[in-house]
Length: 310
Length: 317
Image (cartoon, rainbow over all chains, first blue to last red; front, top):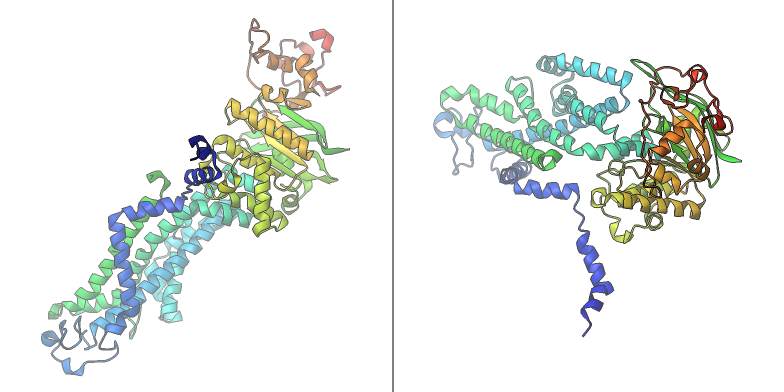
């Protein structure tokens, strides 16, 4: 039997104690815990996950391809083209007799792809310019802010139409033009953050340590404002999907045979008066689910990441 | 030969309200292994001297004079050239350990990044360097603290990390800009003791910048007293405390309580620090000086035998 005093000072106990004392919880670990406490955000993550799975693997469940026209239903779409399990058109058919389920899968793919890629690229671009403007200030700042103000004054739908008239209307052009219109996303907020952070003492310390500007921005300033960029990204993704749907709804976006939520909603709205409501309802439901869950995720991220909310 | 030689350093800031003469005609030398204190009140330009040595002055600053280090004039070097000297040759310890550490970086990264950047040391060798320097600044249980974040440390421990950051590349000169101001008194003593030991072990020169005369008393061999951006007096620390020869130093010392003489009344220096918007044409301390004569308001004293005062020591005794 060892005496209690001896046991307390034994190396095993001290290391065990030391390990207990230093349970290092990082900012991100903290944020994760807070995020998963937010029930709406967790439900939204799940919904979005399902939506992404649907967009990727949805075709596997379809009995019809999105190009095939079901000739047997032509002419009687209003009466027999509705959602039905027996003929394999789970969401019914569209006005041309194509399987709406396959079309919605195809549209989800396009919309999510454009939304995520364009938003991430746009925020990345905006954040880069914002960081440069904020860090260097002076002439560079003036030039970037000038470009920002000019971009704001361009009516984006007209720009969109003109761009697509020149360069065509495929998916790549769509993403490209979305990035160009949205490059200002996050610029102001990142510029402000950098302006604030660059005067902090740890940035002076990094300069004292002989770090280059690039290293200071990427290693010292960026981690301190990553939460801002992430929140901004989560707001920009649904916005981009909204933009994309808006221009597609107006008929200048994604072209046949490709489609997107906006284009499908537009077609559904066009035939609404004939009583084929399902053609509007299914794409609209998917669009709404995506928007709502993306906004709730953004909200949850803000609550979890904003240091002031703690 | 001296390690760092500052000659006739002037620092002027151009602001919207006109020029501010922050540092005027300051000269001093530091030999290898020497400890020098620069003492002055707020706004006397002491921090600006350190920043000019590091090449970190604000953009609106104009300098003249020379800061010679190793045969180079640091004032004329480009930023890229300075980056090679920063930390490797001259390192700086900042005042506030709460804000001079990156809150999002683990301690290991924070320290390891420096050796990686300057010496390309990575992996296990880098970790060893980090542990060594953490041992040198006497952080207990260093191994378990590698993965900690700055907010998990106390103020004193954080200042030790900041000192470790300055030490990790074995610089020849350390500029300590009020290293103990943000700490409480017991921790202050520990940190000063630590700096003293490091200085003795590694033979580093230290410039200690402070407004706290108590910190200087036990630490530095030499002291330089600044007022209004000018050197008022420079002497061996003991001599300065025993028999200050400049009216300003006397005023400063009279404002510090003395434990051996409880009957002594503390007196403050009347008036307020000088307006530095004008180039000083006469002694900047003259308006507040109890010993000032008419000539003090018209002539600018030069630093002779370690004091800048036109009146002799005997006259003002």
